[in-house]
Image (tube, rainbow, N blue to C red; front, side, top):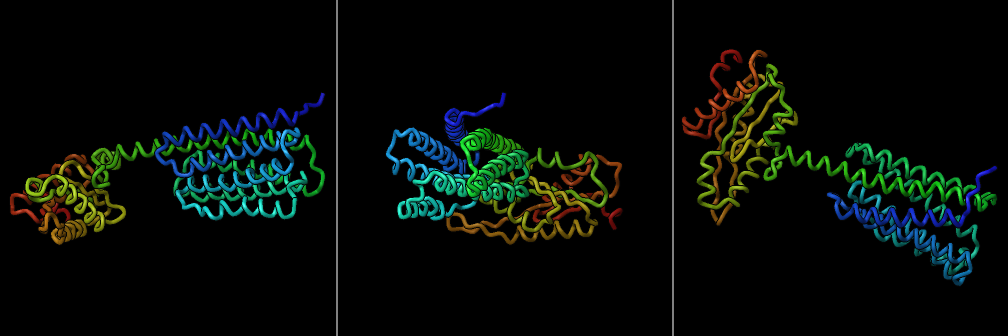
Length: 383
């Protein structure tokens, strides 16, 4: 016996999937670390559900024909325009051209009133399916083009659900244009769309969770004040034994306690932020900068000769000395002391090189500050 789908039952399930999807997306938005686009997306789900209910009630002669035909098409086209706005914002935080969102449904309404085409079922269905096909294709592109900047697993699955949904609408549009569309085909199409809507809502939740996990991981490895890495971040990226032809520099802001005592901790924080920004501006993309606590920072320089490492450290020292930060009408001069250890063998643990750099830093501070001191025992090998 052939399995037949009842259109009325499928439409009920279809509307249920839309309403459930909208409620779940609204819930996700309340707890999401990046809620952009979720409100328009959930609202689009609700608009599509109301439009489908309006068409369903109209087919049962419960509403005036002009009301449900024009109303369902307006809600359908408007819902998909808003759907695009939601996906665009959720995928990549891009600004949404709201004029374009409003223009599509208004154009359909004006043309529909002027020509009366929504009163004919196939023409109305064709306009809705064409809108859905176009919007879902654009939404698939929106999701895929951000995969390099945010390569999360759920992104590809969401694009697959969007693509499948758009393909079903495109197939049904072909049947409508050829004049072979029937109620059974529409029932199967809405049945598949029901699963697509559930799948898209599920991927919104999954993508939000993946973003939250990344954000937590970044927070655990980032200094919240300066935005540089912290001790845990640095330790996770350094091997137990540093490779030869690399260097470690320990940096300490000179007289930082006096800045805090004189100007307050808020100004001290500003100094630390400007100091970190200055260091980052002078380092190579391969170099690592981390704040170890207070005014103490560490720089790791991979693939450098001793002369190159010392030149970089001297440049950092000179650039920091040029910093001028205004506070309470007075300029604050900042200097830094740097202890540098150049790695020349593979047999010494990383902690030993950090200890040598720290000893050199102590010598720099004892010798008058605002200078670079190369750790003892590295100059001869690096010559």
